[in-house]
View 1 (cartoon, helix red, strand yellow):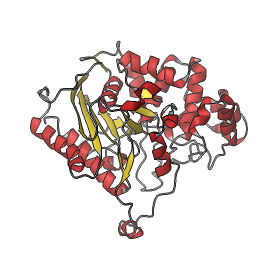
View 2 (view 1 turned 180 degrees about the vertical axis):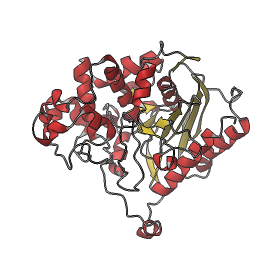
View 3 (view 1 turned 90 degrees about the vertical axis):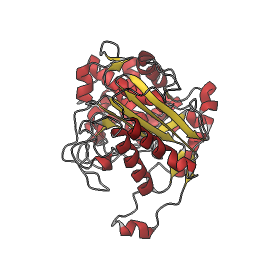
View 4 (view 1 turned 180 degrees about the horizontal axis):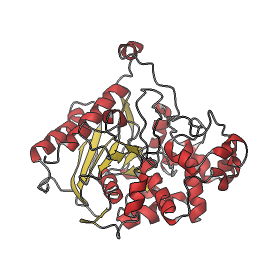
Length: 389
């Protein structure tokens, strides 16, 4: 897959130009108002990038930290191991990581890692520990379960995918960042798809900043909500992505750096599109593998904060029939649409029915999650509306 940076006048007939301009204006809105320092978006359709533009203090060459949108990429690497039979969803994690061989951690399976049901959402792991094998194993040894695996869903910001990356490195016998490059980026023709950014590319990365005021206690009370629990995704943790040290770490749950165009085309690969056609012979994943990855595995589990049904495939979020906006999708999305957002309002999803993928990235992290959420739903809804009919 390749792309041209100047695509504004090349919309296919399936895209409504009026609806597209409405989407484009919405992306531009908060940048022009001074609320966000920059924003970048991309639309891809049936193997082709059809729109790619950057607004504000950045260019189309800028690489954005995509944070938890990285999870779809790491998960997609695991699908390849499942496809070859090297990885079994029901296999205990202890088959690869000694710290999981005994006690209650022996019950944790690969499926638990991919569905945020492993039971250790707050397990500590300093990103730079990744480069020291002994420190990695010591971290895994420290981890303790907060509940029996599989019994609850609580989002694991990074911990479960550190374990998954360890497993994948052992299966392949190669470093994680190299695996992303050779097994995903190169087959899809996406040379700037990075998990852990190489030092020569750091000057392309836009710096992250925090914008807006956080909601007050009164704001939460008016919505009959309590402030969300504190997690490892703090402002200080986000700010660390402005340092060369953290940018270099291939954090499997949040260390991706790329353009919106690259990420939109990655999702085209997950739809089976290679180049200008649907050709599963040219993408790493078989059609059956991708269908299996989109199968919901968390029936009956609820989001612990807002109470809606959790619909998780293998490392990805599924839109579902109802409450799509609560899962990060737009109104009018098809139920099988899937994707994964990221901290600060990053959006990435694809629709296997229409063949559309949409990505929105910004380096301005809004402290108000309600405003950020409304923006995300508005953008995704307008992207859905770009398709005629």
